[in-house]
Image (cartoon, rainbow over all chains, first blue to last red; front, side):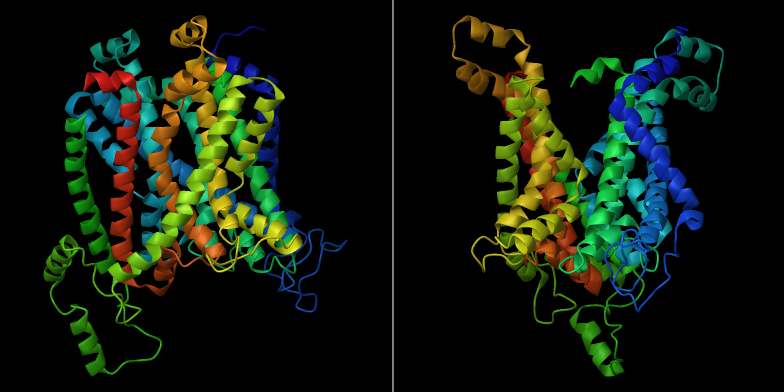
Length: 283
Length: 307
């Protein structure tokens, strides 16, 4: 029963953390709902019932309809697909850049390390949000560009974390032994270093997803992110704000959904951190 | 201390230069000219326009001209608002944005430090849990949702505060400043709680208590100086976030500040305005990061004595 592996210990601790388990449950629910949206949504996200216009929640439309008579529940369900997709894909982009950068810098050490980390320091100090806006303006508001641009901004902290971890690992015996056996740099990264830093990477990735979703929401809110007829939660909130004086439910329901998701992600991420690294868990 | 200061300034100059260069050429490769208007202009007019805005020269020549203008503080004319220069527009919007950011930071610091320090002192009591739960809400509810919700509650339902504008009606500065400040109050509360918890366990605090200082002296004079270093280091990067926040808040509340000008410029493809404000924002953020680094160096006695 008492297995000693890091992951099973962590899983045991995670399971006892109620807030984290609740966050995880909400997340799984959201992911399932997002995938199944076309089948479980009561209406199509673009189906308009212009006779209806904006109607408050009723038995036919659980969360009401928007000014064009589109079912709000369906639009939130479809919006979940885009919002979560942006969250996961952009985080993956950030992960790939950040982990590679951090491993190379930490493992190479010396001059390469100090130049690479100096670049990270400099980039940290720049107003990246402005560059994302700039890119969206110049190259058009394209979903893939959005993934890339957000990912390209969020990798910096990941690079720092990974570098720190690698520096801690690289003088340990198993790494030295592998080096003595003539393992190539690439398999050193893949077989020996990467598996040992998966914990911090998983934690930071979970905490990056809400950041990315916030950024997407922010851009969509300004009208620079997801473009109609596609909708993310950010665009739904934007639409809701425009008509909130008369039809407050159009702001409130997408807002609640978005906030609950961010809560769930933050709780789950915090719980994962506590589970994988009990030392830092007391505050 | 002085040496670090100059070293950092020397590093900032090439960074800003690179930012200006990259932005300039990014905008050059943007598709569509600035005068691809809805109605066609005659070739003669277009030629004159291009001449007036120095678009006939080679890219390289334009770059050199722009950079030398930049050194003199001249950011060129606005593409969309004829007769107004970008520098002029920045000068109009900046005081408004600064005022908004100032109130927001003030609210954030007062609320954040007070509740964070209190939470650390009363650890694991209600005075810890309640402010920290509110802080979690502040972190999870984005500005672009918080603003409209505050408007909905205080502006539309309770009708106690104006819903838009800046300096036109009494109290119209309250909601925008609160909206922008709240998220930072939350971060600052968490940071100051963490920092204080760390410091309160240290020996010099025990010494201070042992020599009979009042609790107030211990906290205010000894613990807070070290415990709030994380807050000071956070303030520099927070300025960048405040800027992004000002885009949203100024849009929601229709405040004529720099943030709204920037968003409008992005929509209108006012390229010179985008270029100028991007460079200006970058310079400002590099400057504030520098200030906050120096302040935290100065607050930390170890690094202060070392240099």
